[in-house]
Image (cartoon, rainbow, N blue to C red):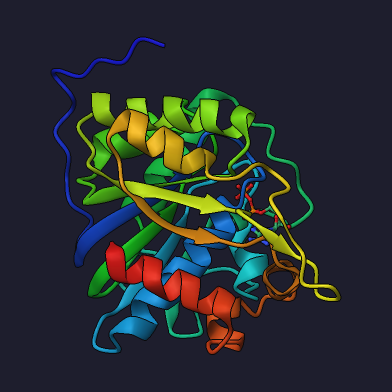
Length: 261
Ligand code: ADP
C-alpha cells in the first residue's frame, strides 16, 4: 500500500484530551478490543487521579458496548456534542451506540469516513488524561484517517504469537512508522494456555513469536497475556477482568502493561 508520509493534513487535537493511545492489530480476533478495554481500566486503576476514555472506531464490528456493558444512545450537550456513556469510571463512545446492535454496517467509504469524523470531532470528552482508541484491524482508510486527523501519543500493537497474525502485525507497525506515530510496543496475547486441571502449559499459537518480531523491528514487548477462560468470560459478560478480578494474575498482566505505556 502507498502511504503518503509527507504533506499529511494538519492534525487537530481532540479538545480536553491530553494523550491518545491507539490499540491496533493486523488481524481481527487476536484480542485487540479486549486489550483496549482492559488497558483503559488498568490506566485508571494504576493512577486514580487520571481520567480515562475509550473510543471505539472499529465501525464495522464495535465490541466496546458489550465488553463495557453499555447500551443506549448518547445525549447531546448544549453545544450539540455527544456525551460519552460511562461505566466502571471509563467514558466510552462507540459506533455501537449510534446504530442498532443487530444492524450490519454496510456503508460505502464516504459514510465510514463521516462516521469516523463524528466520533473524532463530535464528542464532549470533558477533560481526559488518556483516550484509548480501539482501531479496526488492518491498515486501511480508517486507520490512516485517524492517524492523520489527531495527534497520537503512541500505538500499542496486539498480536498472538502465530505467524499469520505476526505477519499482519508487522504491516501495522510499518504503517505507524510511515505516518510517524510512535509505537509504544507489542502485546503478545494468548501467549500460553495453562490447563486448569493438570496445570500443563501449552503454547497454542506458538511461543515468543511477538518477541521475535519485536527484535526484528526494534520494538518493545509491553507484556504477555495468557489465553484464559476468565478473560473470555469477563469480556462476554461485560465485566472486564481488570475491573471484576483485579487480584487475578491475568488482570495483573494488564496492569503491568498499563504501567509501561
Ligand atoms: P479483536 O478485537 O482483535 O477482534 P477481541 O478482543 O474481540 O479481538 O477478542 C476475540 C475473542 O477472543 C473474544 O471472544 C475475546 O473474549 C477472546 N479473547 C481475547 N483475548 C483473550 C485471552 N487472552 N484469553 C481468552 N480469550 C481471549
